[in-house]
Length: 172
Image (cartoon, rainbow, N blue to C red; front, top):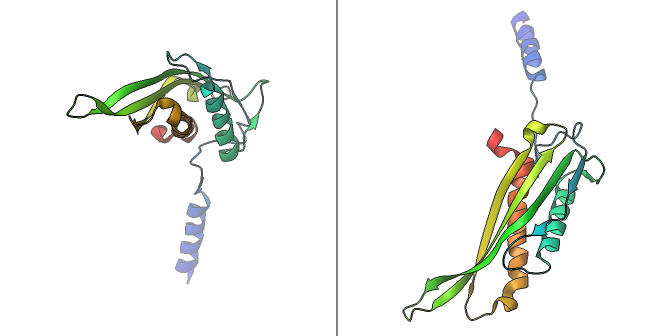
């Protein structure tokens, strides 16, 4: 009987020191330490320019960070800052047919970002580059499919950036 009581007490002390933490968004944020964020307006430095691209990317970034974290946006002394530029937005021919003409075109977009954690500078990350692409049939002009492709590309890139900056999967 004394052995069972001793075993229960020992187990309770061991398990009292354990902590299990789950996050449905995959974030690794200590909200006691990190409360605010600022996502600067992205600039477009690509040679091919789609006028609304930088604004679309910036807004999508803010939407995802708002919905997926408890961080509040501020421009004054933020705990986390993200800034960057679109460095690639280009077309390339794919899937050449037997008549030497391409049957598909690839739209590729790349973004370079800088992530600064002002509360814990060790977690800061400079010059991270993310890219995504979509192929479309040469039956269509870019202007016919550009809006849809830009939506898909920005969603893909924002997911990559969010996972790369907020999850710290590589650090574990």
